[in-house]
Image (cartoon, rainbow, N blue to C red; front, top):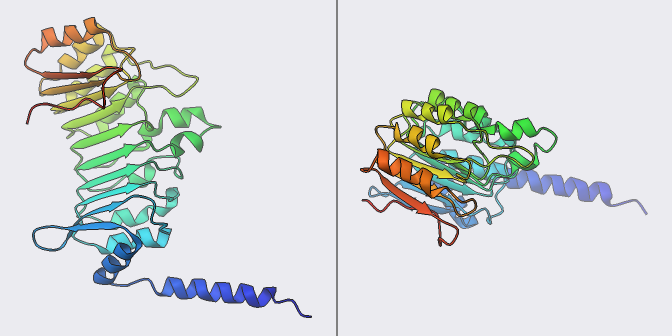
Length: 282
C-alpha cells in the first residue's frame, strides 16, 4: 500500500497556508481577531484602542503579534512572555504612536537591539531571562546587555531590572549619554553570577547629567555613603526608591543621602517588605 505520509504533509501545509491567509488585513479585523485569542484591548474616551495587554497565555504566533501594528491608535502596550526571537519584533517599528511599551519575561532574545529606534516615552524591560540563558557562552554579552539599547529619542522613563542589569560604571555612562531626557529610572545593580558589581561614586555621578525626578535602585548592597552622596548631586531628584529586599543597604549610607538632600522623599524596602518601594507623594 502506498504511504499516506506525502498526502498528510500536503494537507498540513495546505491548512497552515489557509490559516495564514485568514489573518485579517484591516484594523477592525485585527482587533476582533486578537480579542478572540484572549488579548485585552482597552479603548480610550474616543472609543479607539489605546491600551493592549497580553498575558503570554494566548498562544499567539509571531504573525499574530505582528497584527498589533494594525492598531494605529495604540499608546500603551504590555507584552508578557512573548515567544519572539530577536528578529521577530520588527512590527514595533511601525507603531509610531506608541508611548509606553512594557516587555516582561522574554526568553527568546539575547540583546536589546529589537527595541532600539522606537518613539516611546516609557520603556520597561524586566525579567527577560533570554539575556542570561542565550548568553551562557558569552558572559560579557550578558553583563553588557544594557549597552545594546540606544536611539530612543523621546524616552522619559526607563524601567530596566532583573535582566537587563547595570552592574558597572560603563552602563551608567551609556544611559546618561544615550537617554538625556530621562526623568524616571529604575536599575538593578546586581552583577551576573561569577562577576561583581563595580559601580563607583564617579560612575553614579554620571546620572547627575539627567533631569531625573525619580530614581529607583535595586540590590544596593555595594553602595557606600560616598555613592549616595553622588546620587544626592542629582539636583532635580524628588524621590529615591531603594529596593533592598534581596540585599541589604547600609543605613548609614542612606543617612548620608538624607542629610545632603532632606527635601527628597526616600523610601526603603527591606527584607521584610511586602513589595517594592513605592513613592508616597502624589
